[in-house]
Image 1 (cartoon, rainbow, N blue to C red):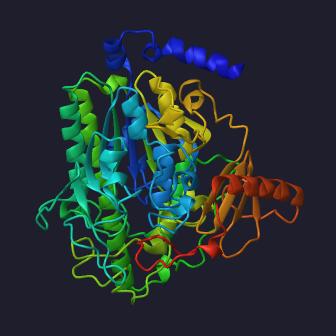
Image 2: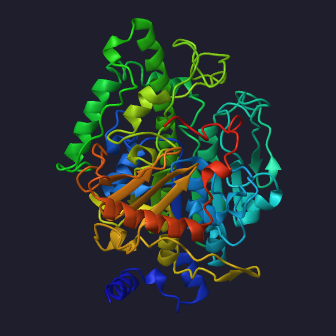
Image 3: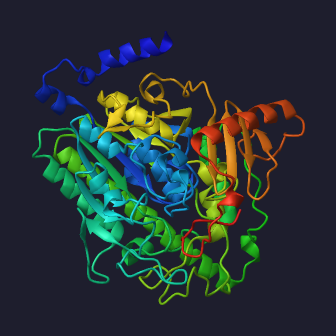
Length: 550
């Protein structure tokens, strides 16, 4: 009954959901939708989530919109995108491990036809569908590319990483990591150092919006930045803004972020904070040269986040210029936590590969490393590819002028599988049971509309959320979370209502809860196509960031 009341309220509140209107009126009054995804950015790296980094455009969206304390991704790039684009758990969509084919349906490495993309469903509902940025859910066959999977316009890379100043193969692995830059199926070959990729993603998004304005349709724009994913490369003028900003080091800055998060209400008074990572050296014990090296890395990382925010600002300006800002919902998230692990080079010459230039330039292939990632993932534990809270907790901002009440912070406990049903309900689009003669997988998530518009604190899910990736497993059910990190098969248990910092494993004291949730996991894994990782474990020598240190 409660769901019926909420739905009726939404129908009354948003007349654009009425499907009895004539076609022209429906097309022009349905909401536009922009989904912004950033890459490898930690939970607290935005200004409005406690950071020192300047993100005024996203800060504005947060101030005028809604933030969630609890929103989850899949802990790593390709599986997150598979779930985000389809509303399915990633195994059901065919990307259970990464964008590599391991010979099983759940691990084929590209989206299957039973799992419809946001592009396909929005287009079936009368929307223009636009994508600028990173794809990473199928590249080997053109049938897997964005234009063939529902997007009218596409600019960006097909795989998981690229240089920011050129399209040369990344010097990673035995043979190098190829970079394919496309615009609507046509390969692009820009001159070296003639552009900065984050700017190009923003520029193409703005151009797509200008072109789409000639159509009598609403639009869906998927703005998928690669920033601040490895390699650390940024424009000199952006780096210059952060000279001296990180001189205090990760220990002091982590405490500063924690205080800001508490003051904003994102961290509640009764919540624990994760323990300081013992593998991260104390800043004050570093030598002068080591401090200079490490400061430079975070200055470049901050510049990459800053530049991403600048390009969000360009899109916002275009929306306003086109007079479409008042009828557009924007959602912002990150695909996983910041990447942990350490490199193997000496402290002053580290890098995923040898650098051919200073950190930040087109010859730099360095990354944040665990020292700074521990700051980025404040206040939570662990890193990308891990299913403790730091590995898969995302900032979440939703903005819709006059529709979403400004300044709200809610619990949420949302997951990326929830975005597809949220968008489809908002747009009044019925998810097809069959598409091009193929029976579709039903949506796995729950609509977030009660949280966005009805002031509900969290999703009334009625069932757990599940994860598996590279043998790492987790289940979230209400306040309870069990987690197991490969190759261990022992479940840990945390009461996230009190201990989101995951400081006390209470599994031994609560065997009934562990048994209940692990049994639910086994049922889910069986029906979703999950295979024990030891039986399919691939080599990772040519997958940037595919497996990080736990």
